[in-house]
Image (cartoon, rainbow, N blue to C red):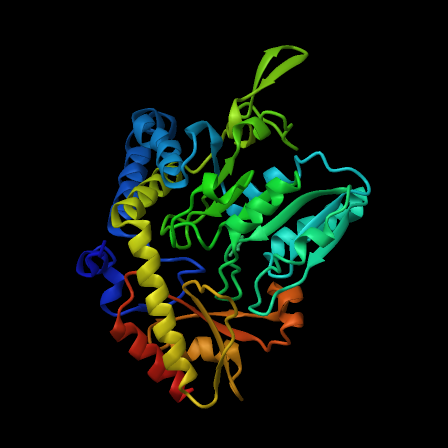
Length: 390
Ligand SMILES: *Cc1c(COP(=O)(O)O)cnc(C)c1O
């Protein structure tokens, strides 16, 4: 399958003069997403928020069907969340972990996830086992079995770290987790919308992601997948009248599947917009998307590495659309501003955003340029020229 670049760019009006390489921060919403949201906001203004929501019942319900189609699961295994972090926390804080339980985690894990792990480890007396990296910088699959003890309960993995171009071998970790009876929570924040994700093939128990990154949905939205039988064994850390039904003064019943983790109030336009974004990604085709993103990122790495003072830092056997690099003598914060003034968007990766990973790899602060399928060779040339001039 090949994707239609001219349609992708026509759907992304800012492409005309903006070279946007911050798709791992927040991508540009395609027109169908923007339109679905603004149409809904107009209805909220015209008829009222609750009334507009009633009218939008079909579009809202499609959120669950669209994600179920994208992830190969049941719609009841999907929950709408306000962010990927809240989705991840909903799972993590509900797991029945006890003092002395051990958690396996790789250094590339996302900062907020690791902060939550540190908090619960300190509060509950959990033990954290850091899994080493292999020669390619990915989670060392050969080291994993030797780290498992009777008290090991859980493995946490970030599929595509936000601070590097690594793609972790998520399905191999799923086979390992299954073989050892471990719960497996996958942070797919950077992979969702960038590549196909099949939760059955990956073998994770729960998977979390956000709307605004490679899925090209709106800000302030996220999603949770949780295997239904696991969800129905868990008590959410917090409940409300969406996640639970008040049956009698002293009794409540939790909602089925992953829905028990939802809260009642929500950004309705956001839910509609994210559902539309998933449909858009499915229409483009996630295999074609992954192929184009990986080709563009590989091109960009080659071109940047050809600049003598630039070092590209991405580890991994297979690499994502995230390109990280530094240039000697160049302060990354200033570089970002200089590029921004030329209508080229990148972001930066400071040490505090990925301490374990960046310490292990002895990395400087980095510039992050994340490509999406709508980027073209001209965008790349603009960025490379501007980096050379820094
Ligand atoms: C951005 C990001 C998150 C957090 O997503 P939010 O929607 O901001 O909560 C989690 N994990 C990874 C890998 C990310 O890149």
